[in-house]
Length: 210
Ligand code: NI
Image (cartoon, rainbow, N blue to C red; front, side, top):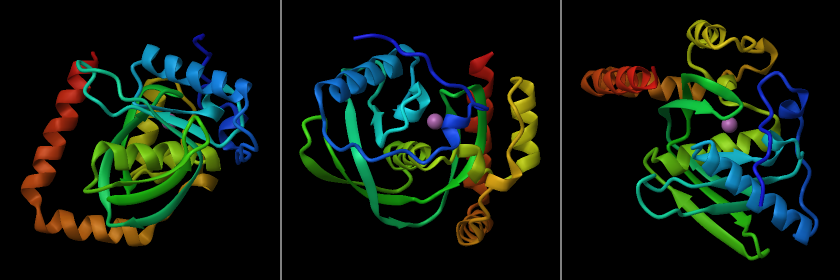
């Protein structure tokens, strides 16, 4: 296995729509294992094939506690078959070193995919848990989308990107997501204490990065 080079934001491959995997060959299995190794090496929660320069519909995720045993999940040719609810998600990406911002996500998702042996499986992730957000984030990479396209405030996102010497948001890719935005705003109005808690969590995460 080997550690692969991670493509950074600005590289055009991150805007391509990835191709279906026709056969899970030995070469594909090696790529998947290398992606897992690369993800663990970079302390990431997920990694998609375009991020290592392969425009293929594959991503890997591990949302387990970093202090416990690993729990690698492999998704080949994934399809999101159900999504509902709306939530704030504070996200970063291995292609955007250190840059985090608040984005809109669905709260619940159901995805269908093949595992590393080509066996189909279905998985449901609920309540805005890390897995639900990670699936959406990684799936996006296969569509040529990135987390910043879902940002709730492009000015805040641009400030963060500039701080880490990354290109600004690409206006033409910004997603309006009016329904998600409206649902989040309505929820926030009813839960001011949760917003305060979320702000504090973000602050702590930001401080722990320094
Ligand atoms: Ni990413």
